[in-house]
Length: 192
Ligand SMILES: [Fe+2]
Image (cartoon, rainbow, N blue to C red; front, side, top):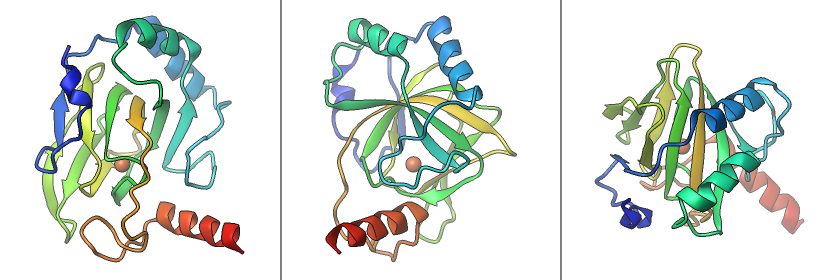
């Protein structure tokens, strides 16, 4: 078990496999079933809570929390544990709540992750293997593609607002992502 993988991810590494314990099948299946039930509430922190958004976050199950206490004891309590659901394609973006995440993909249906250069040309392509823990670089533009695939994953991350310039992305380019626009609108409302 490599605890050092909780350290920040260097920008020259896009993904790395972790030797963390594998989540048992019954806990995985419970998570998949709960997502497919359509009854979960989107709790994504900065986006508008539309159920059919390409990217949503749901609360993780109690059984995963209990399992993680025993099997992933090195994860600090202030790290968020979420279910992440993606409808492909998810367009290129950088994450504004975290620098990296620890992901355990449950269903892929052939989805592929790309990282992009500034001009959106593909820097690297990677297929996350299901039922394997990875650290995912989210400060470099990335997208998830796959013909109408739904991807469900367990996602653990430290909530860190990446406050540089909210109007610009990591590379200094003007950022027009929907998540950032929504966040800026909420911020303006709060100040008004
Ligand atoms: Fe992302």
